[in-house]
Image 1 (cartoon, one colour):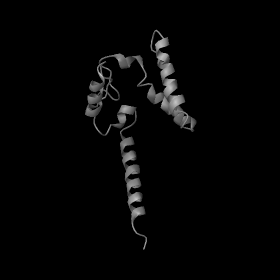
Image 2 (cartoon, rainbow, N blue to C red; image 1 turned 180 degrees about the vertical axis):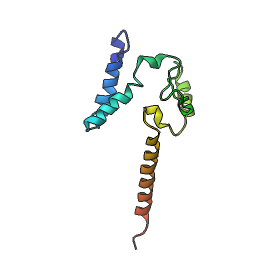
Image 3 (tube, helix red, strand yellow; image 1 turned 90 degrees about the vertical axis):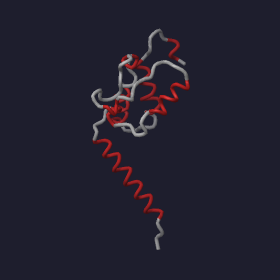
Image 4 (spheres, helix red, strand yellow; image 1 turned 45 degrees about the horizontal axis):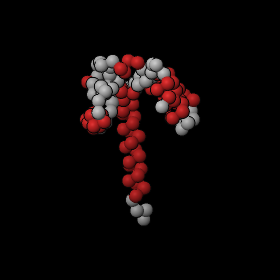
Length: 122
């Protein structure tokens, strides 16, 4: 991979590759593309290499489980991922807690529409 060609980690290039090349091709709204770039800055940063770096709000206990694990084996990474909570708080992604409410309302509406569409029409 191109990372081997650098003496230091090219954080800006990583952010660009993921935000613009990977996701940006699927996102057409310029504001959404900008949002992806800004959100990924929390993940592609030199601070992620610090032992005490956590994603999201440092004061929120729900965010305590979200950090970059230390270098280890593949099985160790799998165990770490499996131990993460099934529902992540919106603060992990830099969003307001109300984003969870909005997401839950949209999901509930979608589920209800699906159930109603399966009912007989007679």
